[in-house]
Each structure stands twice: as C-alpha cells, then as structure tokens.
Length: 212
Image 1 (cartoon, rainbow, N blue to C red):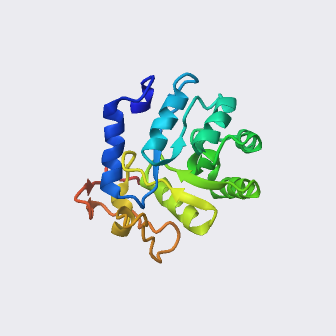
Image 2: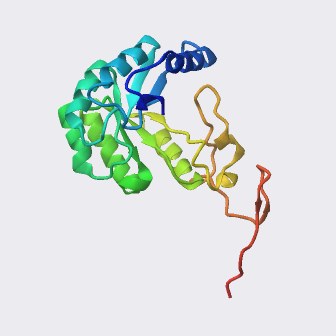
C-alpha cells in the first residue's frame, strides 16, 4: 500500500528498516507494489527500496505497461505477473526482458500441467519462477507441492490473508522455519478429508445439510 504514494516518505523507509531489523541481513526481502507505481514515481521508489536492501519488486507498474516494466527490471529485479493466465503474455514478458522472476498462480493458469510448461519456458530464458497463491488452503498446498517438485521455482508464496480452509492443512504446513515448510510424506496434496467437529486450529466444521 505504501507504494501508492508519489514518492517514499520517512515513514515508508522506517517500515522497511523495521522489517530488515526483524529478519536480519541474510533474508531476502521482496516488496509488492500492487501495480501502483507510475512512470514518474517508479525510479524514486526503486532507489529507496534499493537503499534498504530490497532484492526484488513484485508488480511494480500496470501489468499492461510492459515497456516500463523492462526499464524497472534493469534497476531492480521485477516479479510478475500474478494476475495473468495467458501463455503468450508470459512469453512476451520473457521475450522483452521485463521480469527477473516469472510469477504465476496455479489456479489461474490451468493447474499443474500449465504451470509446468510456464516453468519450463522460463527456465529456457534463464529466468526462475515463483508461485503465487490467493485462494484457499487447497490451492496453497498445490502451490507448495509444485514448488517442491520444480527446482527452477525460487520462492513459493505462503499467503496468510487468503486462508480459507486452513483447518484442513496438517500443522506442519502452517509453520515456516527459516523460510521452509515441511510437507511430509502424505499422498497427494497431503490434505485429509473433512471430518465435522473441532479442528486442530480450534475451528468448528459442522454439517449444513445431509444429502439423500
């Protein structure tokens, strides 16, 4: 949200510094600009981010402004495009050198098969990928498993806002230790069928209606 301002303020930089102080110097920080930077403000923000050790910027400008994304990517590595689903658009980003990390959501691009093709395509350009997740715990699990199975995936997003059905996840899926989640040895996505009653997170799942 802070990137919606025309230029960074002392408060914005203090927030970045607070994050850096909390995670230490060995942790890579990515900033999500939510497509809010303009052609006039982008360089000021990128320079400010760089001064605080930010390693990459996600969705810096409008996703349609690929030419500006190219320019930003030359200054600060760009991560895009989480809201896209068309393969030819992803290829255009790679062709033009607009991204340093190709980002996609399994739920948008067509599942494991389509995501595997995008990861393969990015690898041919020497670009690593990152999986984005904005839906339920089912998609979160799929995203984590995809990342674990594909060495070209640099980072898998672990979303703590869109957390519907989190009660279905094994406890280990909800614990991040040194940037890593233990997926375990359970088959499939590792999710057990829903059993009505109190869940391990304290939530209660009840039966709405029996179907006969």
